[in-house]
Length: 410
Image (cartoon, rainbow, N blue to C red; front, side, top):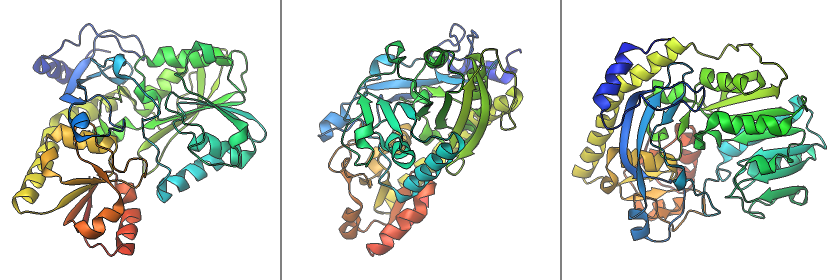
């Protein structure tokens, strides 16, 4: 398929790096089209820092997104894997939210029922602090192995704790012995640039155990492109998948895609698959055609500047009017929102419900992370919520604290 002319024009206008020599990590096609750039952003969003100066001095890198018109994959062309330094102080735990917990419980029950995960061996690649793996093992009386350099054994209390082993390491060939009856990987693949290489490693580890199902969950890039969700583009996320590009990758790496669907207010893309001996050609309804993906990319490239200007003007106006503005949610969306806009000085405080973040400082932003109780005395005029799915939950918390403030979402 030939490059779309408008994408070629984007390439020429970008100018800061040539995409012609870059190879797609998904399909191996050489020559990607640049359509979006953000410079000097923190290379990590969730590493907790103890001082304001350490946060302000945090290393920075650039994002230059390239699009492959052969498979629909999007990647940061100049991502440097040396910054992939995940460790126990990488704080991305979401289980302090009732909304997220209910989603996790429903998902765990779905997988347990569908794959009869009772008294089975489960492996989670990129398990973070182990919340979901422990949930699967607790609800299904399973045994688990979690592999993640940021794992913290004992952080999450669970009745299944004695049946779960954590390995503080990056997944690789040396972990091929850990396969079990079910393999899951949530919000990890987007942090890995050699995507096909990684998935083929998983496939080789499974070998001829063709009944071992796998489940992956990642952000949906169609939503990012369609809704101009620039807050979901940050340095750690070097790989961006649409349903079509994700399914093509799995098929090319020796899997049959058995289910492909969206969840969590259409923000997450979920895929279920089985290893096969011969390549599968089955296409699922959610997979978009390449022409549609190109349309989404063009839409993003054409309209993103207006979205950025809207939020810059809003924050400037609030500052000029002397309004107290607070960000709710101190994670990656917050970092991307403020550093992309270059507007960190227009926000006074950042709030988060995760107690392990309280008192720490946001990388690249330098703002100290406060607990929600802080708002009782601060009395903000406006709270900008980084993820709209939490608005009802946040509004209930504010009402319980007798805090009256305008709540708006991105």
